[in-house]
Image 1 (cartoon, rainbow, N blue to C red):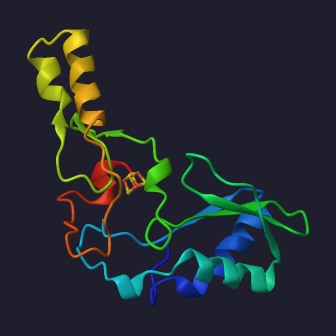
Image 2 (cartoon, rainbow, N blue to C red):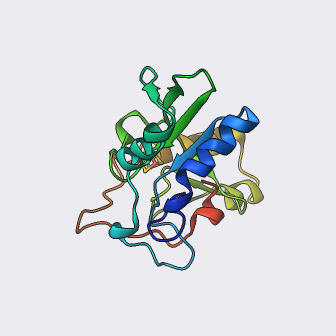
Length: 167
Ligand code: SF4
């Protein structure tokens, strides 16, 4: 996760690391899910800026569209692998998102930024049948939002941080 003024001077070094190790480094834009609640829009380093910084040193070519996967991907023109950037804030891809999450304490979430959770643990511990659990999950998925609304005045930051959700 790249944060302006914190690690935005390490973008190329991180890309270099991926090239050296033969792994795909994936950058992700800074999202308002930090435990400290310090997120500011000005702290976000967008996908375009990340890609431009890498491209200036290691020329890139974008790979075909991602489908439901979160990262846009590029390949290094010198054949030294690929790199990905997840543009959650500057280029939201919620319309293609098929993700849901079950937290470590048994709460089902339909979005990283969901403000409601569905208590699967409580249901299981009450002796619910598989059909009842399925019904809960179906109902929950039916409430999945069209998008996260970061940047909108109506945006409400979720109570949990990324590490508690399992980003
Ligand atoms: S719907 Fe939520 S979890 Fe899916 S991409 Fe958008 S912000 Fe992320």
